[in-house]
Image (cartoon, rainbow, N blue to C red; front, top):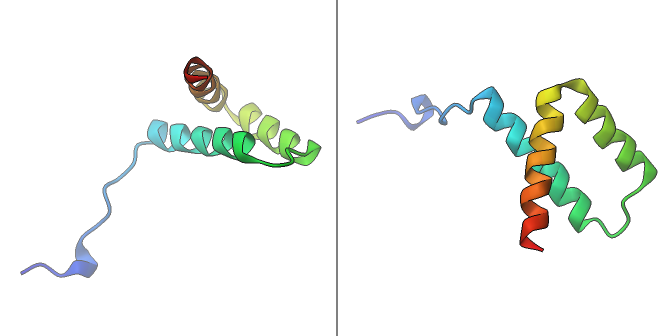
Length: 68
């Protein structure tokens, strides 16, 4: 019998973690009753950290727009 404390969560790749974070940003933006200037700056700062951040966001945003 295995110890539940020793069972690790499945590891998420760096790329998957970025996609998850991009999805969080998109959901926050879409669901926000009031998307503030501070929110916009925080998103822009996250996108500026890495080209991978920006690309993940743009890809998910494009997919989201196709469902509208």
